[in-house]
Image (tube, rainbow, N blue to C red; front, side, top):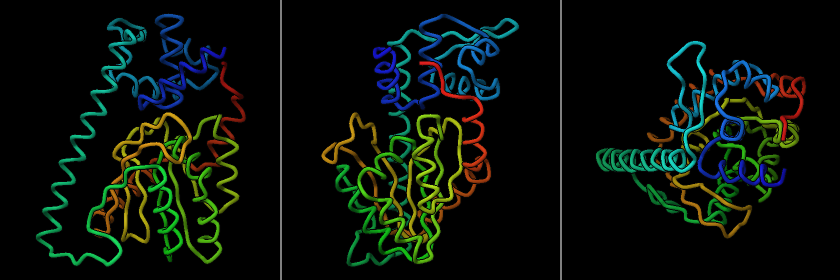
Length: 278
């Protein structure tokens, strides 16, 4: 049991969601299966299984058969992890390209840097990221948008960001958040709702993680492959006061928001299905 849990936790560290890690581990342990049997074994909905399988296929960790009905098989572990690493490398290269494009756009627009921030600033630790988030929440006036994974949501609650958020909401601010709500995050999600968050569930979200404050300042995670809940853990994030980039992230957030499911509906679905097998 403990080995199963540790294996799944370490898989999540390679950038897969909790559901993807559980499903991949199940296929690895019990062999190829069709979606109908996977849904039965994992005690979840078939649609949810299809979404998770598509994410794993996209990551190169699962292969579908060519016959009918389709059977899905786990790719050999070493090959699957190499594929996950290559996907992260590709995302990092894409972010570097975006960074250069935004720097060029900033130079053409002749933006004036504020006294507090340069146009782009790299943050290099959990401590620096958390302290910056708290400062920006405290200085925000109207809106705070968050798109993260479950681990980052736990991290924010652990290191005091949600205390700043509560004060922000109390003074009339609006906070909206998107992440993949799993059974293990039910208690956290309810706590955030009580704090004043408006939350929506996006299944198997594996895109960039970002924050936007008042549509003016933004932060995106470059490397958030954290192994433990430590304030001294290394982490890379790009902070910007470029409003053009902030508006781009707001547009991305609104597209995700339209596709996401209200947290209350997701909570009801999870409670009805019950805890996943260990």
